[in-house]
Image (cartoon, rainbow, N blue to C red; front, side, top):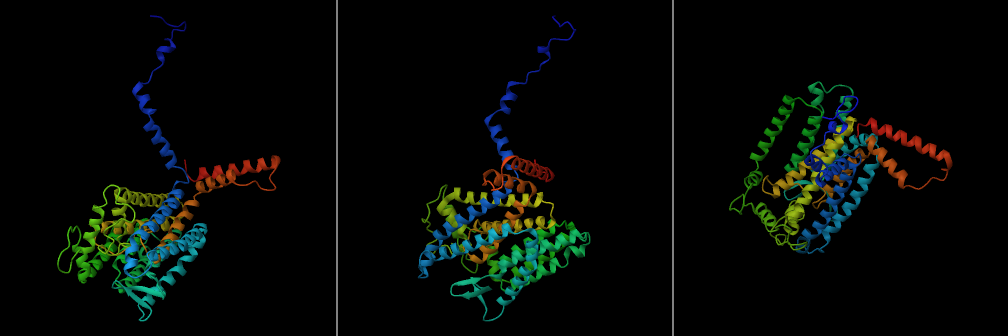
Length: 454
């Protein structure tokens, strides 16, 4: 047995070779792709791009589907085929301006707008119940006519008002360390929320009331409400909901249509629910093509509003519906990420409230189209026809964009990108420019480390 002069074993015998299978699995293309995707997913600007890109894609695809699904309805009403599309495009243009304005507002301005928006929403919701001002659509008294064919639904702005005002209220109480007392947790958040719910239910719009209730419980959950308190409020809301459903034959009929596969005779005919299933079933994998839907020719009511997801499944197939679901899932994940990574209480509650609002409304709408939930009459956010729903939703998306941009690491990444691709300043030259650039990059790096990003 050979050995070195020092008595130690040869170096080559001390080297341990890794198994070939381990090295191969580590360097496999799948592993490298996963590692690269994981790094890209954890970048500071991931949430910003997901919110901005996802919301724009949903809105654009919604415009396409509104144009396709509403043509027959418009012609049946002796209107131009592009009538509903033009109104939705105008609302999307205005909503885009609101989204851009909200994304550029500082957090202090958002908090300052909370009380005026709440007061305005309550005032408009009271006006809905005034004879001669409010008008009924599909049996619900929750609209105000603005003249001509333009109408506004104030209850949609009540969602935004509850998110902003509730987030500001809870944030202020957290700063004063009052959330440990149950009365400060509930008052005045729950009474004001019940005021909004009462005004909405006076018009008979239970679908919007469900969304508002989901926002309330989302805010209480984020505020850290004790389980017994959370269960108590949930029990009261559930009891009120059961009474409202039991006392309304129309709501009982909608409840009876869950899982229906064919129209029935009697009060619960389930015509809309069944034809929504027919539209989805006839779409196949890639659909029949844009504009080729059969159900929108008078068979499927509300094809361009509440049941636009069914027309999407018929014309774009499973691939189209899964794409819509993926966009909403990405938007929801980004909102949760923004709420979880911030240290500002208001940003956490507002981002969580907006995410709860959009996610709950999407689940209720899609669940009704799939026959898994009763038809609640709520539109698919950013997708269905309706300017009153689109405007506050796009403003809420602007809030999420502003919060995603406001993260320290995201601010540093955006500033570095502007420096890299921006124009040179007129006074930048020589060593002074290099010194200023080095100091700026050092400050950005320290800000990124302090934010906890890796």
